[in-house]
Image 1 (cartoon, rainbow, N blue to C red):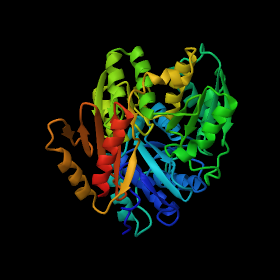
Image 2 (spheres, rainbow, N blue to C red; image 1 turned 90 degrees about the horizontal axis):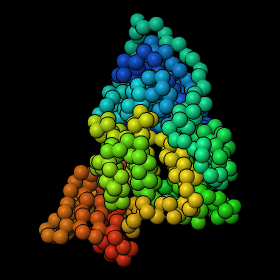
Image 3 (tube, rainbow, N blue to C red; image 1 turned 120 degrees about the vertical axis):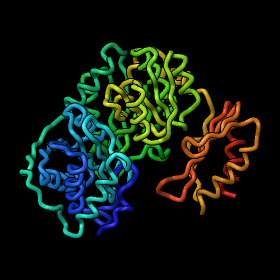
Length: 453
């Protein structure tokens, strides 16, 4: 029996092709996906990685072999696959490894209506079946007739749906530099932006899963250097950067300065609450203090949750929230089946920018109120022991509160920090925020000394 523990993660399948998984295993995953979801029809899409088309076809063969009709939408972004799952009301599978290097690939799976499939919602069962069937190389025979395979292009429908949610028709003309990182933004942006009053300056729109220009991970500052330079050189109003599967969007202002995802979360939350006063907005425990503040100021109810899309989506479904945002630039919308779409967040930012006369830096200043460290990773020998040392240093103090919703969060009057263990690496992740830079740096250095001590 194969051991799939290295590639089946908390929310998806991810590993090196063909060393850790291949088309034969993808076919088993396809059959197991249909068996676990009970789907009579599914939709499949893939990114631009060299291995993606073959893996997607193999998954489709496995699904069709268990009797499911398969709709193949071909090249797409992850949020385009979520659109297809929601619009067609089918479970879906997206073949991508997001921002990982070229040799990686993976599968993001969802139930009908883009509802997430994670360890607790079907992924563990899918893994167990694939492991059980792997010695024979095929699932047991079934009486179900072979499913059909159909090709369908949903790009224009996806773009039309996004544009129906944000009115950009009356904004002032804008110039936007967009860095697609040779990922799927190069496929979706031209269609989504078509006809908008936005002059598009494209960077690295050629689909190339070997990522010849830079890693398609805008969370790493070195990967937005080219975008920052182009924005300043051309006098653009805004810069946008998408990750490899284009479900996350990062924003750069007219000065070439990165805009914190928490500020984007607050901006979009204010706009969504204007449409639905009193609604709930979800934010994870690492977003800035400014997010719940802005939500309350705009008449909404902020709800704090753990980091991770499965927690955000579950809480959105439970509360009927209109919007959710994370520090990692994942943005979730009730109008998009509670799924994350960086493209829709980008349209909101363009609409807000173009709806007033000031530059982006001035617009977002009202949402960027505190000094933040960003996420700092420390490699440690014993995550539990180091986290316990940090807890021990703070738990007896009268001037702080501790909670363990997700890792350890310590909150004082003028600062807070969160320390979380990585699920996949021997790392502790630290985020610190304070009312001023000096306090943030003092707290950051105190905690890092404990973590690395």
